Image (tube, helix red, strand yellow):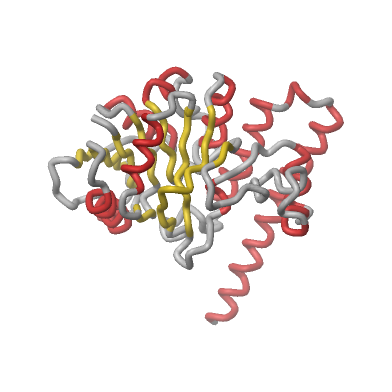
Length: 294
C-alpha cells in the first residue's frame, strides 16, 4: 500500500467526515487507507462516517495530544508513506497521488508538505516555514518579513523569499498536511509527545533534517485548510498556553545549548511576555464581547 492517511478527530465529527470524503474522492492512482484516530471528549462528536472499506476508525483514543494520537495511528498504518492530515482540510483532486509519486521518485526526501491554501485562496503561510531561531523570530515579530519578503535574512520565519508556485527545500512544513516515509518516521521515533499541541511538526522536521533528509514544500499538490473551524485556533487559555509552551519547549530542546545565557534569557523573556500579552488581549476581547451582548 502506498499511503496511510492519519486524521485525528477531536470533537469535529462533521469536519472530519468532510475531510475523509475529500480524500476518498480526490485520490485515484495511489493505493491508500484512512485511519481516523478518535480522541473526542464529547460523545456526540464521535466520528461516524462515511462508511468505506478503506476507512478504519479507532475510537476511545486517550487524549494525550496530537502527537500521541498520530503515533498510535502510525503503528497501525500499512502504507509506505504516512500522511498526517488535519480534520479541517479539503484535499484537492490528485494531490495525494502527486505527492506519493514525488516521494517515491526521490528517497532523499524525509518530509513533503503539500501546498496549503485558505478558503479565500491565499497561501497558508505555515505550509513552508523556517525554524524559529532567535533572529528569525525577532525579525518576524518586528514585521521585517512583510517589509522585505524577498530577503532570506528577514523572511526566514515563513520562508517568504521562496516562490509558492515552485517545489522548494524548506526547513519545515505544517502538520496540517505532512507526508512522511514510514521508515523515516520510525527512524526518528515519530512525534515527540512532550508537545501536546503545536510545535510537534517543527520538531519532527528538525529531527528528520538532522538525519540528513530533505524537507520539501510541494507546490504541485494542494489542500484547503479551513483554519479555525476545528476550534484549534480559537484563543482559549488552554490553546494560548499550549502554543507558548511549545515555543519554549522547542527552544530548550534544540537551541538552548547553541546560544549564550544572555540570548536565552532574552528568548525566555520574550516568550513569557508574549504569553502574558496574549492572555490579556484575549481577556479584553471577551470583556468587550460580553459588554456588547449585555
